[in-house]
Image 1: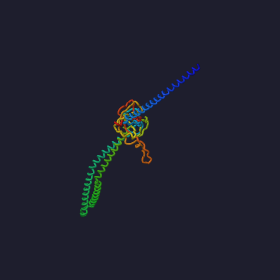
Image 2: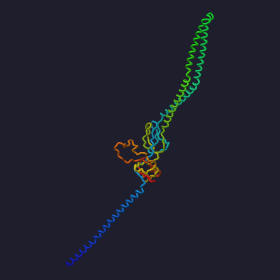
Image 3: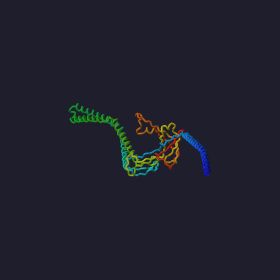
Image 4: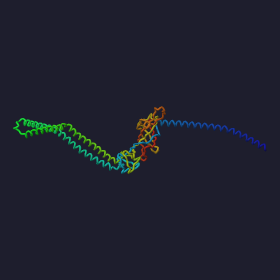
Length: 377
């Protein structure tokens, strides 16, 4: 029985060895098939990746995008035209105002006094001009008349002198018994008086002769009065403007921003108090110069706003700036210094928004956006 058990064990061992030898080729075949499947899957993945990249490049071949872009618009600085204390402040931060709305009032009692003084100066200048105008009109008649009168007076004086000389000669030619010393003295006095009258008439004629000069002097006073009136009118206009500028009104619709003034503050002429951000906004996209080969004004654009992922805007290229950002900087690069390092420049492109805006999602200046321009359209 021990022998039988031994034989049985030997037979079992022999059968077991045969089974293992038969299973080994099966495992080898399965491993080979697995490696082949993995290679096939890897090849398929690579083919799909290449196909996907190709399709992406094909469908996006005419799209040029950048993330160096932002929202911009018109920001109007509101400054004081006149100095003074702010008596009324009628706006607050981020308040929407309409064109013509009263924003700030400046205490203008000093400017009202200047206005009244300027009005009085204009009235005085107008009266002076009227007076000199009349004087000029009178001078055009008086001075020629005075010249004629002076000439007549001289002729009259000469005639009296001639008569006095004749009387004086006659008194000395007649016999002494035919006249008296009194008559001789009278003739002498009359001659002296007539001589003096001629001298006086000649002096008056000399004074009356510069007719044109005297008329020109009267006209000069009139033109001076005209200039004084114009100067007074200019001062009056400036005073009226100062009074008008006491009330600062909105030049257009928009939102109050960067307010730096409070009621009671003293403001100087030209001091900025706040800004008004207008409704009109657009996109400035700083594209690389290598992206502009096919970009033209009028091409369509899609715009994504970082702050509002749900907002999809559509627009078009309005213009391309004639210069890079560095060329307009305070210290532009000097490429001729010998240590030039070439860098890709960025050119600002202005993109107008055509549709997609939502009043509930306002675009603030400076917001980051990502525009995509369809250069193939």
